[in-house]
Image 1 (cartoon, protein in one colour):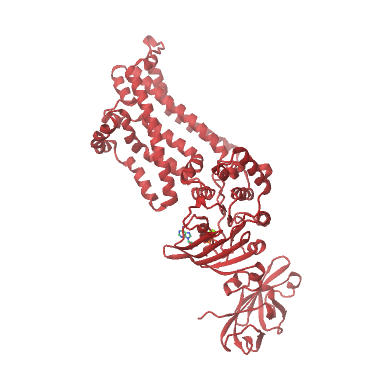
Image 2 (cartoon, each protein chain N blue to C red):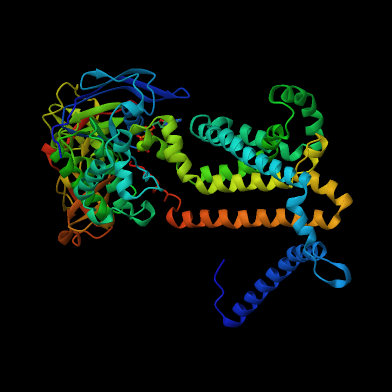
Length: 356
Length: 276
Ligand SMILES: Nc1ncnc2c1ncn2[C@@H]1O[C@H](COP(=O)(O)OP(=O)(O)OP(=O)(O)O)[C@@H](O)[C@H]1O
Ligand SMILES: [Mg+2]
């Protein structure tokens, strides 16, 4: 296999709307050569649209697509040399696995022996050496997506585009295949854009993760940073910071309730008395006996997640929060127990409350 | 429907099935048998194949058979050339006009042949001027005539595959639109193309009204004329045409059937979960 095919990708200020409703709203994204960037975001935020515009399957209303410094905005899809793997199974039903992979090579006038050899190599690469003669309907979903990946790689694309290629597969195959995608991508050092709405998937295999919302990029950074220091409340929520406590700023700390102070040094710039939300992961809230900690409430439900159990706690102010606690200790707090909660100050994010 | 498992009930359904099959068989086979009987009837109850032997000798019939075969072939080809790219394009690029195209294609069903002829006759003076006075110009009317049936067959075929994803996959691999059509759409539409073609052939071979009204000597017109002087010969040709269409049907169904084992429709992708 040849390596080092990476080309830099630049999406510049892309706009696209459908019937007046914007799907992309000024998306700008730079991907470095050989890098795997995940686009993460909720359904309908424009991930697929961005990928399709990059592939030339959709046209942008405005903005530019540059690959390796070359402006592709008016180049048709068939001339862009991009390997794409779709969410839906997309193998040609009338061709065997091997012929599917060889399809692009055939169009490039590669000789039959050469394309059989290369297609065979790629089948080995995706671990399906034995399945060359199988038709798509004779393969499992996971196998079909592997072949689709091999088919996309066969043309030695400048960029590899993956649009939720794993979402139709069951959890175990999904984890296995995403690791394989990462291995192959690293091996070939091919610039890759990977679309998903599964944060775990994105964080697990990416060099950088771009979180999208409503047609634009909210944050683009390495997985650890996105996870630990989400740039906006939206990103925080998306990477699992799903408790929002309301409070008010009071001289260098946040007041979560009468007499309940959260020491916080990050309230910089917010005037005393302004309303804020304290965003915190379920794992960063600590359970204790009633009266301890900075919050109090009553346990409502338990849900067992394996090593941890997630408790829902109703706070005095009627807010519900989720708290993760080690499963061995969860038994100490059955439903309707009065508990105290403390917040890991370092883990909490402070966000200005939206007006109203 | 739940499967019936009790043996008695099962036997009953099997019996009903055979009865239906038997009745249908009698309904279809009896006239054919009568035709065979009539066309081979000799003097004094003996069998006589002279009517069958006369088929290739009858100049007029032979010409008509050739004409009808040519018409059937031309019609099927022209229909496919018109319909396959159009329907594919509409599905991919203009889904909004899909309803309109369907309506247009089904129109010939509700327009009586006589109206069609009255409408087309003036056009035909021009058509014959351009193409000469050959019965093959009937192809144009016949394409219109077979439109509804061919449309149904092809549309079902197109609906059965993930046209959008397949064509986009092919495009991203470097295929031009022509290549998409020839290498992706057609091979996966084989069954539908064969049935559309078969329907067209069968319709053209059996068509009488338009050919007769426009004064062209096709198989059915010739049969009618022959029937007036030699009934046994006319019946023999009709039966031969029926058998031909039947054999064609069996052969094509076989071809399609073999294909079907090889290519099931695409499995639908699981719905995208909504991340909150
Ligand atoms: N062909 C189209 N016609 C009309 N609206 C469209 C079309 N394609 C996308 N949209 C709209 O654009 C928005 C973005 O769609 P897109 O498919 O890019 O979302 P996504 O982030 O990929 O979502 P998902 O995770 O569900 O795949 C959506 O609101 C969608 O309804
Ligand atoms: Mg999508």
